[in-house]
Each structure stands twice: as structure tokens, then as C-alpha cells.
Length: 128
Image (cartoon, rainbow, N blue to C red; front, side, top):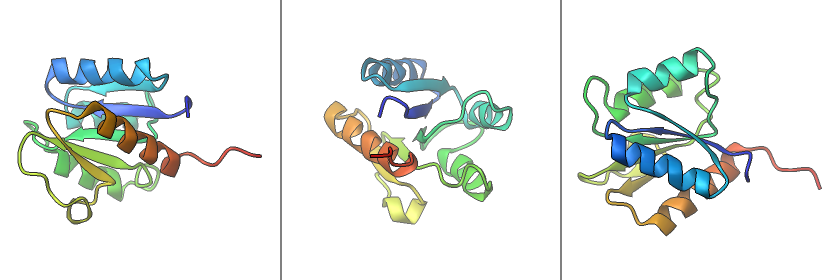
């Protein structure tokens, strides 16, 4: 699973940097974006092609839900599992079109488990 690439989109620098460090410590490739607009720029210009997106639900200028809506309409990005993160009310993942949702502050083991499941869904199976 080391090939899995995670894009962490969160306007809180400390949270974003901590999550990137956590994922890299687990042997995953991780990059971050401070906003939905910055994340869209990374995707649009091909600077990072994530297998999973960990997305803050509540951000200024472009909410996580608005970002998800753009991503899910794009033919190349729509297959990327999105995991919403929020300090507020946890929405139902199906209702918000997400692979999963996580409450802040995170339970690290639950977060890693959910991200690893999303990676398995996103990445093609390895040949036997």
C-alpha cells in the first residue's frame, strides 16, 4: 500500500502538517493544500495525483462540500475516495457523497484504518 497517495485539504496548518507527517510516517505519500481552491490547482495542473482525499468540511472561501462537488463532476477525479473531516456535526457519508467521515480531534487508529480502506478501493489490485 506504500503506493497510495493522500491529499490532505485543511485550512488549519497544524492539523494539515500533523496529518501529512502521520501518513508519511506510515509509509504513504502525502501532500497538503490549505484550501479547496489550492487543492483544485494541484489537481488541475497535475502537481499531485491523489488516490484518496482527506477533506476538511468547514473551510473559508470554498467549503469541503463545494470542493467535493467539483471533484465528483470531473471525469478523472470522480473515482477518488473522499473522506470528510469536521469538528462539527458528523454528516452521513452517503448523504454527502463521501467514502467516510471522521470527527476532529481524530482517533488516529480509526483514521488510519479508514484511509487504508480507501486506498484499497482506489488502487488497482496487485498482480498475484
